[in-house]
Image 1: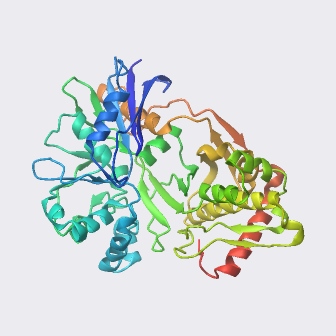
Image 2: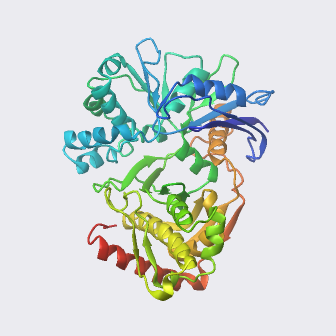
Image 3: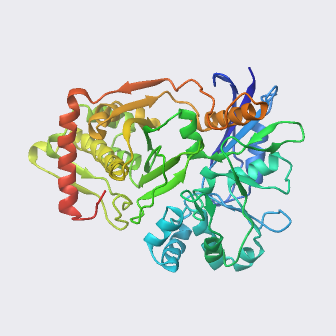
Length: 479
């Protein structure tokens, strides 16, 4: 038996879990908020270190043999030739870069060219797009930028004492917009296209490799992005998909191959095990529920769920297209939401509440269909996020998704995934684990929901949703 730690450095906080190497059982936990001030899109990376130190206080890491690091994706830490930060890290969605994203699409010759090059089309949040923004808006800082790291790369580098060798993993690299999951190689020409010149990029190491050892003798694994770490912590495999319910929504699944999608709906990421994680995003998930709750004068989503349960599947013919912030799947950035099927008998609060839940889930089911349409097998769906606990979500999701739904008990699966990676690298270094097979930790405790006899009803609701979508936006969605 050994002990390893997993670090989850999110945009708001640092969580650390200390786990048993054999079973994955969580032995100890630490937490600290990030001391961040000013713009949410510009963050001094030192804040991440301060938070890490506070979370690890009180002897939390005593006896730990290895540490895995996961961190927020899409953060760019530009360094000069001496390893100093050129400016605060560019993090988050950062809508400042929307124009830069469109510029990059045009500069390479369109969405299809990007999909073929790196498996994704530039979005405002991606590092490659932030580099373009930097070059256009802060040319002096862009010129000084000699090294590019992401958040987890920078934290690993700091833990190792800032060595000359800088590393990353394939999962994190796949989200940059200048590394191809299909070829496993960087596209330095895309860095130059965005930044205006070449920059040093971290070495991409294997899933079970160690990035190095700290001066105190702690092994540090490769690290990865938060999406890949969460998937690894959940223990998902082929046939599994994950639906995340945040303000926006995302659907990802494990697949043996990288996918190139010229429509831009699929972002082809690599995972933390050597497989692939194609991701489809919707812009409207829980924000749809919150907007409906506000419209109905309800205090919270739990009350909205209670109200929705008083209605029946199909909401008496009421259909909500939840495109409140525009939409990405389908690609309708400037559209608005639609409420259809208004009749005297359907104009009741409980039916609108039900339509909000069904509209949100049908939008995510459309995202699932994008993956299924590209040959991705989906037999089981993990449903994540606080909204996954709502009865109205659990009642409708299995039949609308057309698959078994698993709702894991709340846990920091991102930190657990980072710890599992640390255990894998430690086992390989000690000769007790195969670099091709990660440690077989206990699966997440979960509630399992089957479609059962409601499957036909759910499919009828989806057909109604699809009919309204096609009437309102004909030809916009082609899975």
